Image (tube, rainbow, N blue to C red):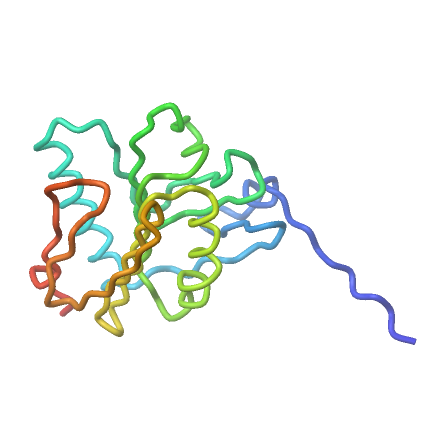
Length: 182
């Protein structure tokens, strides 16, 4: 007779007790270790964060932009702890010294080979059900941007030669052709 497998249930304490420099995300008691991002991934995080921050600043906007590593307690509790590549939070009441307590308004994930199933499936579902207004999946390998406008229940797909309209702002678009992946 086979012994029953012990199911491990992780908590936020396990995240806080990781060795220095090791990062992970927590979804419903399961721990997902994060790989070190490559250069192209980081280029996209920097370029997009810079453009978003500049736009918000030019409009004297209230929203704040946080690149990873930045803690998002997606449901304002300790059951789901994520570190989206870019989080835009417009409700400053959600911000604490520990991160964002609740759903950011806009999340961008830059896909890497190790994050593909999480970004396209698990996070997509979690972000939608938590109340994220807009979710972008930027895929440097496929050179595609998937834009989910959860408020309007719409989906659009763009290539890296397109200008992508930001749904949470009326007059903001990002020209992906201007972001080099070389």
